[in-house]
Length: 213
Image (cartoon, rainbow, N blue to C red; front, top):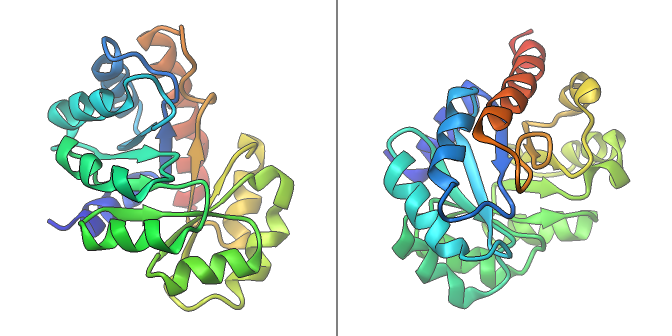
């Protein structure tokens, strides 16, 4: 199964990416199991997390048969090959650097670049990205996705990340959001795996109710 097909299968289960920024190496597998048990099967470790590459390696070794595994905060072309080596499949970026997007595609990673303006969104699409992350979504607002969906090429999928409120999920869906990225709503440094499971189940319950309707 290709990384795209696997990602799409995970999205169909629940269109949520769990962002575990600040996770420790010694807890990443336990946290990932809690997230998966809670109903989310796409997990990213931002690269500004200490020991991020080792976290991704352990996450991929333990969960790659169950989850789409990726990184966040990718900004350097030179990190792409290393990400492939540790088992990453998804690469989320905070910007729309064409050279980073192109390197991901060339080396078998699925890129999800971050954008805010229409120019950034089109730059990412022209570089080959299909999945785009609106960030911070709370600043842009629901109408931003609705407006861009009307002009971006068919098949471009938009995700809302950063400050999305759980009670506004239906509004984002109606505007055209394919999915979401959630960080502290699911994980925060220092909380237990039991708390991660509890938080994940809350997110899953709300999102699944909206997207099943």
